[in-house]
Image (cartoon, rainbow, N blue to C red; front, side):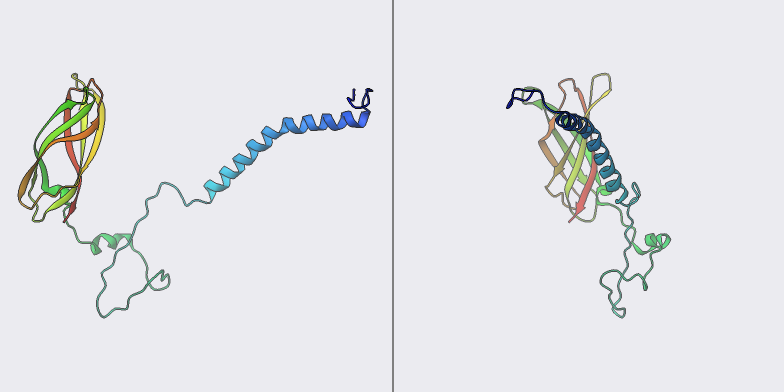
Amino acid sequence: MSLASGRFSSEPERMTASHFRVGIGWLPIVVIVGIGTWLLFSYASKPAGGKPLQLATAAATQASPVTVGLAKDHLSFDPATAEAITPEQPAPVDGLKISSQSWRRGGLGSNAFVTMTLRNANDYAVKNIEISCAFTRPDGSHLTDRTRLIHDAVNMKSRKTFARMHVGFVNVNASKAKCSLLAASHI
């Protein structure tokens, strides 16, 4: 029934409404297919996944010209010789050692404060020392890992104590902590 005239609508008007309802019914399917196609093309346009990029380094001599940018015709990268070009130097973290460590709770028992002494056996000072502390239950099962970056420097052939460093929030069931060194920067 048409509201304006008070009589039944004609057959073509019913067909249009029927087509409209069918079109609305297909809308979710069209949207899903469109999103699937978009995802397929966006993943296909990315480079082959999972393979790490390898960068080549080369030593420049005074007599050789310097090439800026990509010179595909003149230079080639051989992964077998890449290790031979870069000198072998120990990482700054290799000369560091945690000689003593302890921890305690604070902040209603949810904060962990670690006190540790770091020894630097390197022939240079180090800074930006990254540590990771693993917290466990009394039975030894793992609970939480927290990392922290220490911005202070530790001089060469010396030791430094860091008292009550806030490592982060920990589970209230934690009873043991074991910290280890992850990385450090050469000064």
